[in-house]
Image (cartoon, rainbow, N blue to C red):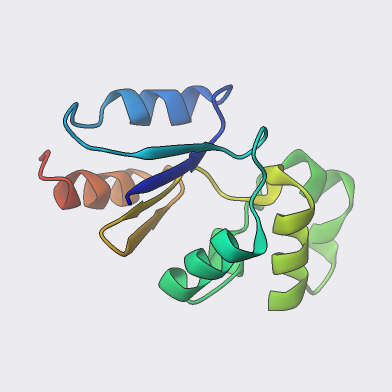
Amino acid sequence: MNTVYYLPSCDTCRKIIKSLPKDIELDFQDIKENPINEESLAKMYALSGSYEALFSKRAQLYKERGLKNQKLTEDDYKSLILEHYTFLSRPVFIIKNEIFIGNSQPNILKLMKSLGNV
């Protein structure tokens, strides 16, 4: 099943989701209401190869906790993502066993190509 992990309160997530083809079947996972579990994170890790790639360094908690000044390991990134939804870079799309992380323009273009919408 194609899945998107997102926050409904995030304007960027809503804009990206609104631009998707209407015929695509997606399982929408609100990461605030339904936090990431070990199994979902393990699947994301298997596709991305890194917890750091899934981690948002733009999160308020990242700044508040002074994590920028610490040397974080892959285990740290994993624990933080499981601890609080804000640490997951979003949105995360899993389409046909391919992962698209975050909202960068190149990433969204790759997502749209994968969906046949470009």
